[in-house]
Length: 320
Image 1 (cartoon, helix red, strand yellow):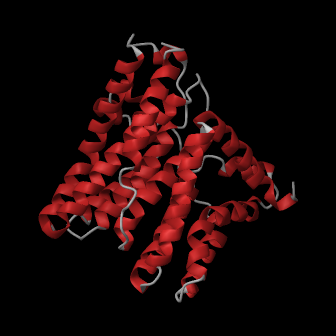
Image 2: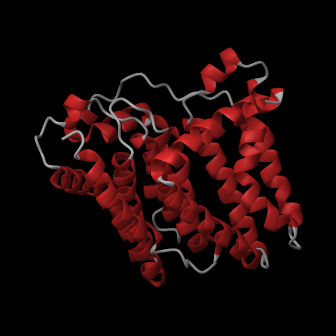
């Protein structure tokens, strides 16, 4: 492998592994839909503001990814010029958005994305993963260990975004965008598979396990974010329809995160590629709402939930 593409090669190996676990058919369907989404971007880039919002959204997602990624210290310790080697990885991530933009009349906006790709990997800011925020243990049950652990590790970044979402809840669409970013952080909570004894602690059947897990996590999601969206709807009643669609989609992608995790669950495994696939689904489903396009993929998470429910149930029967 070419020297400067070592990290890209690591991601390729991880991603191929996750695609095989998810199934080639489902993975191919997701990426066909992604290709359709990229094609639809050509319509979005006909107007300046939607094009600008798209570019800024992509930059925000890259920033979020850089902040929460776990391997920054490892890469700096084991790879020479690690920051430079992250650039090709991020460039691959933004290419679906860049290619149609380069052929539009607002091609110069691509400079914002390129600058983000170049400078974001050099950010030295670290989110400490020390166990803290003990008060969360009084609010969130140990049964919801994914959320309890994830929120403790990302408490400062997550707390800042959550505060910003409520502070801006009266501004049209702004809290929705912040909730969207926070949801991509929540996807990270489902990367790690718990040990077998934790999986069996309740003694549930596979179907009941999934039902209870999804219900509990949707309840947490609603308690955390729904009030901000309701306040936004009260101040901006003309956006009520968008807000309702947005929250329905977010509920389904959280359910999908649970189902996809247990579709490929093995005890103590780390599902690195799962995060990328969930972010792809989140982007192609919701981004058109913010950039003025037609949200033609709103049913995608629902369809995938139905598909993966039976696959997750079948996989869990091997362990429960």
